[in-house]
Image 1 (cartoon, rainbow, N blue to C red):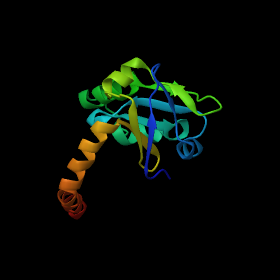
Image 2 (tube, rainbow, N blue to C red):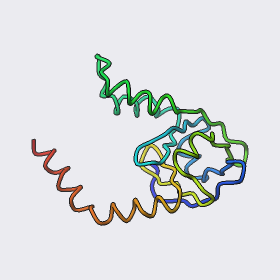
Image 3 (tube, rainbow, N blue to C red):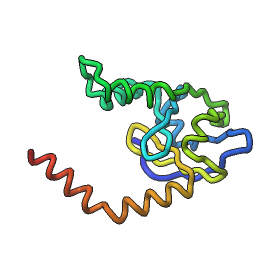
Image 4 (cartoon, rainbow, N blue to C red):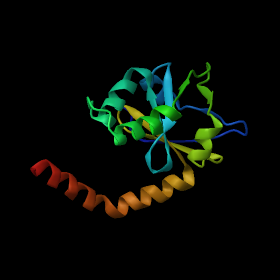
Length: 145
């Protein structure tokens, strides 16, 4: 299970070292794609299909929201194969989307990690801290239904 935060630097040619703890948990083959709130998702190949099924609800009917989710996530996805030191080159379309600058944060979320620009992550983390009580209340309401 991936937990915690890991800070690293993005090189001038969009090269980044994936933290060892993340590499060990995700495996050799990884997928990176656009994700929500302006970050990227990094997930092991073994968990990729399960993530997509959670997003689309395994719907038998391919509705407009399912198609758009597929376009957003699948259409932006790239396979990554880190070198022996765990480094990869991120596609420019993804670094632009996530506004990645020199300082980058990996956030472990169980079966996947998010990749954030450090400044953007600090803003999001502050927002989450301010609204954490509301989030848990909404989840509790959902469970009661």
